[in-house]
Length: 268
Image 1 (spheres, helix red, strand yellow):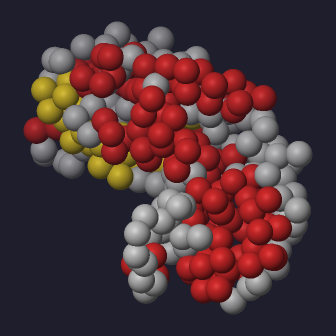
Image 2 (tube, rainbow, N blue to C red):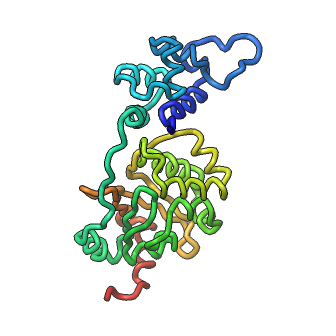
Image 3 (cartoon, rainbow, N blue to C red):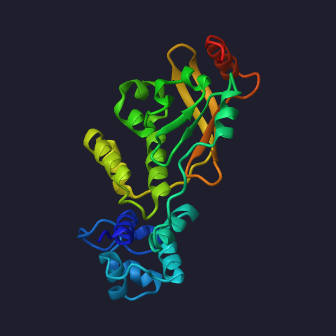
C-alpha cells in the first residue's frame, strides 16, 4: 500500500535544517539530512514512536491537530498544509473532464486573446486560434509539462524556464493530492523522470502549489520579449482550468500580440 503521507513528511523533514527551527547543529557530521525524526516529534509535541509510525505508514490517519503541529514545525505554507491534510483523507471521487460547450464558445469569441483549457495532467483539451501565435505546445492534445521539460524549443521560448517548471511540478502534485496512483499520472511521471533530471529533482521535493495567476514571459521568435498576465480560472463542476493570457493595455506586449493575431485566418 502506498505511503503517501509518510513519503511527504520525510521529504519535507529532510529540507528543514536544525537552525531553521532553533536547534543547534551539533558537533561533527549529522548522519541524516535535515531534521531527525525525534527532533521533529519533540518540536511537534508528539512521541517519537508515534511519529515513526506516521512516516512508516503504520498510521495514515492522524488528527488534524497533529497535522497542524507537524506543518508548523515543517514550516509549511497554507497550500502545503492543506495538501498534508488531504494526504490523510480518503481519495475524493473524480470530477468531470468534459469541456462545457459554453467555454468553447467563449474562448472562440476572443480573436485576439490567447486562451486554452487544461486538465489536471496539463493536457491541453481546448484552445482558441489566438493561443497558437505563442507556441505550438498549446495545441489540443499536447501536454504542457512534457513540452516544457523535453522540447528544446520551449526552453528557448521561456526565459524563466526553471521557475516555470518548478511551479508546474508543484501544481501537478497539488492537483492530484493523495491520488498519486492515478494511472495517467504514473505514466506522465515515468516519462518525465526518464527524460529530465530536473523533473526528477523537483518531483522528489514534494512541493505543492495551487494554480494561480501570474506574469509569464516569452522570448518570442517573431515578436521578441512578451510579458503577459496568465489568469487561471477553475471551471465549475469539472477538474479543468481555463487559462487566459493578456497584456497591459497599450504596452509593447499588447501591440505585439495584436499584430501576431491579426495574421491569423478569420474564424470560420
